[in-house]
Length: 143
View 1 (cartoon, helix red, strand yellow):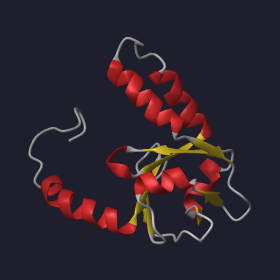
View 2 (tube, one colour):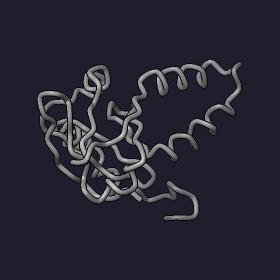
View 3 (tube, helix red, strand yellow):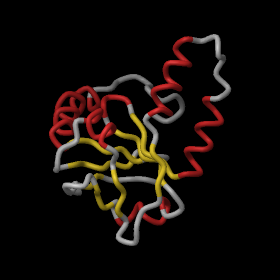
């Protein structure tokens, strides 16, 4: 399970060191792809296969499903972290997420997300207060 907030730096070749606590779960392979809110999603290879199978069930007649599938899969990059736990973020994904040198990697349970540090700070600023004021059941059966 991916949890916590980490602040790695990306080098000039687009590489970043995965947080140590994520490496075991990602050792067999990782898939990076476009996420919502202009971050990158980081899935373990097995979890990505599970998600791919689920989204393949969407009807081809649904334009929204086709658009989502195209964007989600066309940006995907599969790789295996090196011995130091580094992965390389392809240039097109760096552009999509607006990544600079300073990054934030957060755990969101079944995946990690890579954010530009300034974008993550803006996201937190915009969403922390509404989060603290949530008065209704957002996730059924949990809160």
